[in-house]
Structure formats: C-alpha cells, structure tokens
Amino acid sequence: MEKVPVKVCIGTTCYLLGASKLIDLENQLPEAWKGRVAVSGCTCLDLCDAEGVCNAPFVKVGDTVVSHATPISVMAAIADALGEPLPQEALS
Ligand code: FES
Image 1: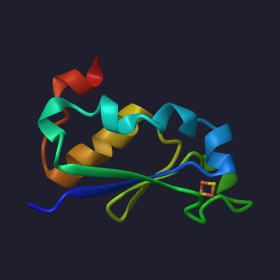
Image 2: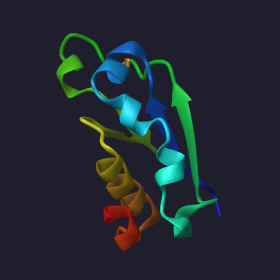
Image 3: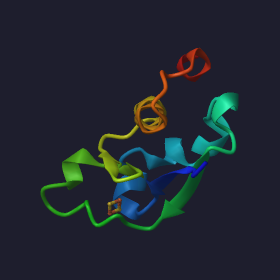
Image 4: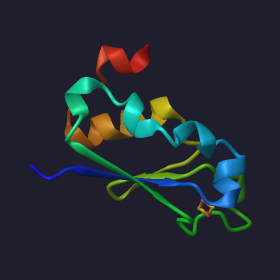
C-alpha cells in the first residue's frame, strides 16, 4: 500500500505562523497510521505570496493543501486521504 505523502512547510513564513507545532507531526500520529504516512519537511510550498500569507502555515496531504494547519487539521486531512475516520487517540 502506498503511503500518504505529507509535506510540512517549515519555511520562514509558515514557521513563524505556527508550523513549529507541526515539526514533530510524525511522532503525534496515531499508532494505527505508523508506516502508512510519509511525513517530510520542505522549505516553501510557494503558497505564501501576498494573498496566501494570511493562510499560513501550509501542509500538503497528497494533493490537498491544508491552510491554517494545525496537528488536528492535518490529521483530519490524512484520515480523508486514508478513507478512514479520525482515530480517537488523535483527538486526545
Ligand atoms: S514558507 Fe510556507 S508556503 Fe512559503
């Protein structure tokens, strides 16, 4: 089974607007998702232009862009990509 790719933008704009809370996202994933999600960082997703800056931080889950990304909103997008409900442990 192909892993769901998750790209966390840790560029300056996203980092300053909250991506610092997403850096250890891989360690926050529910146990059932370990090995099924590939988390990586990138320096800029080219979404932080003048119009996009208000929507940072950004994360891409597959082809889906999550704006105002938080650990829980990213996990919700991962659940969508996997076609599963969000595990209870992700909410705690
Ligand atoms: S710094 Fe995150 S999209 Fe540019």
